[in-house]
Image 1 (cartoon, rainbow, N blue to C red):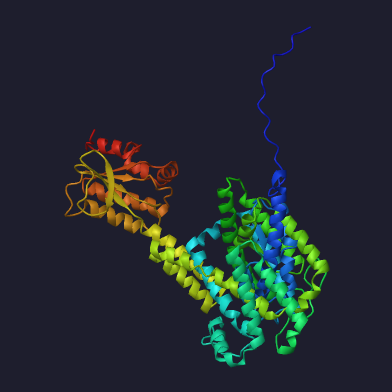
Image 2: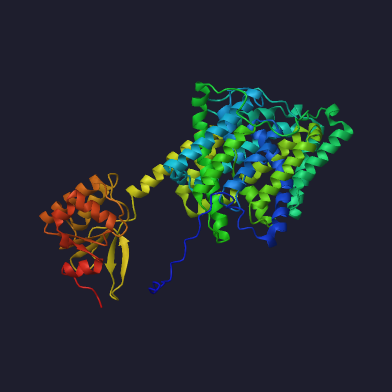
Length: 580
């Protein structure tokens, strides 16, 4: 009988790849399950008044706010990757939605609701397309400073927009100063001029809601002050018939589950094209805000998360929002903080919230008809005030005045022109700032001191590294926008008035990319240096840049022996000396 073949230890089997579902729930930590469920209850208690308030910003029926944390929150909990991100109605996306739908249909009308549903579906489709063609980088052009300015502007716009309802003043008739204006400032000033029409009972309702909500938060952030204020106001309104005192109330609110399917009204081509920029603006905010929140919590708890899976979850959450009669949803930093502060560490908390909302919709919507509109206005007013990030703006001012200017301009555009236009302005300003940094990099000459250490000094004629050798560090990719600066600085270093320079070493250690214009400029620089009797050497060239220089003919011109692993080697090859 032949000997059996000698067995060899097999490589460990690769881990089975799980389907991209339940990543925010599994593995399930049973010891934390009670904490996650309790956090879900807390989120429902704190989030219900908040999402109802967002309907006021979006111009949607109040019940649709609850719908955002019924199906969409559940869809992301099941299909997203982050264990911490909470998806639901959001102030920024609600404000963009309202701006985009303005003039297309009467606020809160069935057609308006249908268009909001189509907008959510369009946003979801854009998110899916962005995932497929890798357009997620677009959100990177909304820097943190721009986002602070944008949300501050949204906060100001939202807060001053609630003053009329908080005082019981009927919506004023006003004239825009210029056609491009959002009307926010003009409406606010007209409201103040109509202060004599304020209703005393409405004012007391607003004061009561603010005192209870803010007071509870000061005592303990986990106390659902807004929910207590809502329930208390509903009871007082029902018991003492505040409507008889001129306090406007919501009126009958539909109960039960939302109908699931395409919006009732078909969208026309003109409406589709009108809403497309709005959907794109919401897409940008969702990408920037959700990704930043997920990354922050993943870093805090040293967890892995897949941004692409999150993108799928956000896309399908928005599609489900459009199919369930509500409006766009976003990853919410405030709701995510609510869950984290209550001890939640997985999407089990969000599944719990969805279950509670289901019960509320089935059995507890009837009392909402007694809720004064001033209650929602006061809740939204507080949300707006909290969005105004004075501390953040102050930090930006101290750190970078140029970034503060961009943030302040973004906030100003939000308030005076509109949120969609502010997104566009923010992206354009960020791109210009990016180009400015690439065009005007912090180039330097490396200078060796008596101890043999190298330090960077600003580019200036007459500066050398050692003897007649100059090490010039170009601190950016070399492309068409900065080639003139590159050439000018080289000529400054070897030009008239400079000491006798025998060699110029280009430190290309941070030059990842060289475009065609950059390659031609390098050849031009070589010829000009050659005419002056100066060698051109290149140190620390990265493989990507070296292959491009080979392709453009730069290597053939200067010779392969002109490349060195380090600038110290290049200095020695050029005839300079270095200290021991």
